[in-house]
Amino acid sequence: MKLIIYNDKFGKCKMIVPNYNRKDDLLRTLNLLNNMGVFDEIDEQVYSNALDNVPDQANYVTTVDHTELPYNGWNELTKSRSAAIIESWINPPDTTSPPVVDMVKARKAKMDLEWRPKRNKLLTELDIDYQRADEDANQSKKAAIARDKKKLRDMPVDFSKAIEAITDPKELDDFDPVIDLIVNMESV
Image (cartoon, rainbow, N blue to C red; front, top):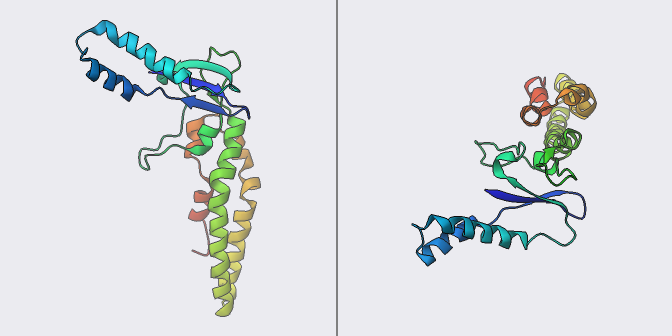
C-alpha cells in the first residue's frame, strides 16, 4: 500500500493514507472484480485522490510503501502507537527515502510525553502519603517518602546516560525509568 509522507509547515512529519476502502467500494459498484487490469487503474485513482489532500505548505512530499515505514511504537496489548515515537519521525529532504526516527527527538519526546507525566503523578500521590505520614507522626515513613520523591525528581539526570546510550527506537520504547524507580521505592 502506497502512503504519502510530507513535512508540514512546522517541520513535523505527516502521513496521508489513501482510502483503500473506497477502492473496494468502487470495485463492487463497477462489478469488475474479475478484471485484474482495473485494479491498478483504481489503485492509481485512489492514490491520486489522496495526493490532492497534501497541503500547499507541505515540504519533502514523498511516496513510500507501508513496509518502508520506521518503527511506530505499536503496542499489541494497548492497541495503540507511541506518540513519542511517531512525533520523532523525520522525512529526509531527498524525497526518495522513507521517514526515519530521529533518536534525539524520540528521547526528548519520551521524557516529555510519557516519563515526566507519569513521574509527576507519582510525586502528587507521594505528597498525599507524606501528609498522612505527617499526621500520623510516622518519621520513618516520611523519610522513606522523601527519599523516593528525591529519586523521582532526579530521574531525568540520573537516567540521562542510560537514555542517551539507547540507539534503537524499539529499545527506547521498551525502556521506562519510572517503572525502574517504582520497583525500588522504599515507601511502597
